Image 1 (tube, one colour):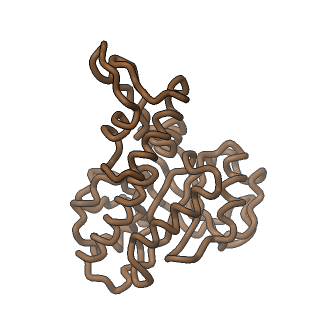
Image 2: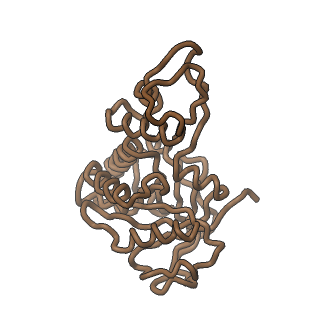
Image 3: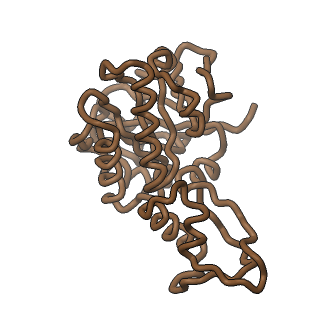
Length: 266
């Protein structure tokens, strides 16, 4: 069997969690951060910080409410919340899509695509949480294939909806108690990979590139523009900061020599 690690997803419904008591085979935790346009889960900060302190991988998800507002506003709300915590580059990001808001399937698919596109441009690529029973309500799914699938399928199988070839995360069990969690049952998940691979997704996968031509010089901003998900100035600025963070010897520099072996976060 391929490597899989166990994780849970939590929210205020689970109460105040004693992370020292949570079983050590739980290797990652995805915390509810926001919902709609204004709601911030009151346990998000404590859960994310304390789960990280217990040496577990951490994620944050937004529960979509398409009837309340457009995806731009909800993405901005989510991004403001996760970056304010101080762990913006240590969390796996996710969109929880299980409420249609009475949108038609094509409109709901476009709503989700826009949210995912904004978060990708301004921070990094999130995953899409989608229950198996709900997938048929989401149209335009071909446009969503570029985002990894977090599939909820507690009935066995699992049945992966098109166009994804497989799932990256699987919520396989809901409603089971767990030591250290005082209130409500806990949802259990598998991540298809090991812990290092989970952290790579949380930080953004790092790829090595031998950049440019030896003897030439390139501005770091032009390099960031080459790898940013869009030409939006905010997206370029985020990529520039991430490139410098991934290549500490570039701190304080504005140019890159050709032939440099560049670590590029994805």
